[in-house]
Amino acid sequence: MLKRVVYRLYERRLLGDVREGAIPRHLGLIQDGNRRFAQEVGISKLEGYRLAAAKTEEVLSWCSELKIPSITLWWLSTENLSRHVDDLSAVVEVTRRIDGTTRGPNSADRRIGAAASLHNGSPKER
Image 1 (cartoon, one colour):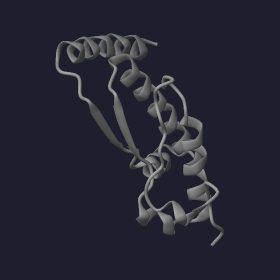
Image 2 (image 1 turned 90 degrees about the vertical axis):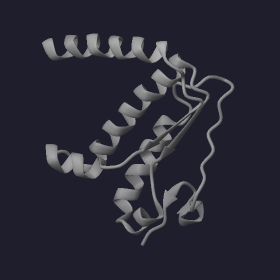
Image 3 (image 1 turned 135 degrees about the vertical axis):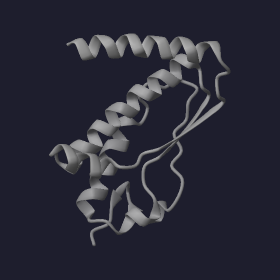
């Protein structure tokens, strides 16, 4: 409980600091370390990805509040495409979860990269 209160105070202070400075026109986030985090805290990889998606939604909400016009999320590199289909399916599931969340009517979601390596948004069976 105390940790949550302290974090909220810290968050408000940071938000105040950010609002006083220049707001970026673009923010890029590399979603890395979700599997390692899951292993370290003893949860499934899927749950690690879900927690990452929840944090991403929170960050997107902050970006919306700050009116940052462009955000790029890197969820999957071509190196990751050799991973087991279950890992890739987990990434696809959580990226679908954040599609369209916390964004306004003037936003767009464009998927770029090696999309041919995925079939209908799901990993091909290996």
